[in-house]
Length: 171
Image 1 (cartoon, one colour):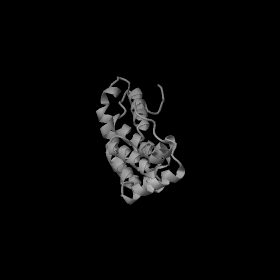
Image 2: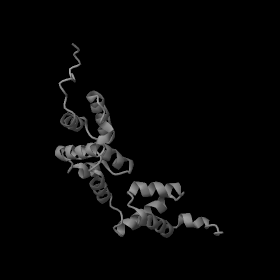
Image 3: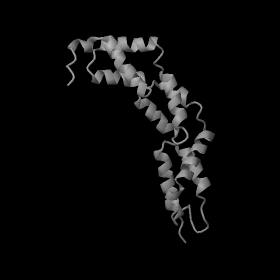
Image 4: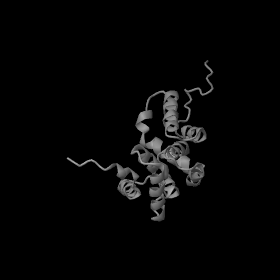
């Protein structure tokens, strides 16, 4: 059984830095995520700021690097909208989010959406083109692709047959 930690450990910036270093060995955290973890631990604002300052001095905090790595790692399977939301949830500043998403142009997003759709093509193999188009569009939208990209990819992959009537006119 571990002896209880002295109450002063919560007031020790060195202990807070040690805690943050243990977290950072597992994965990258944004400053906001680390602050949230320290808050849950009950560390005072002064101790939190001292610990974050120390990590900054050691060049271990870089939200910009984290944002770019996050986008690079997931842009082949998620759209700009989803990536933006994920970065916001991680506490990345809006200007850094915009910088990280800047390389994702429409051509890259269309290619990524096409790959995502091809990988899950089995989901959209039914006989009804209208249903397949709807399912595929919903599938891509849930992955954060914009409506323009979704429309472009759907029109390319699910052309209307002569039996289908996209206008909704019934003879």
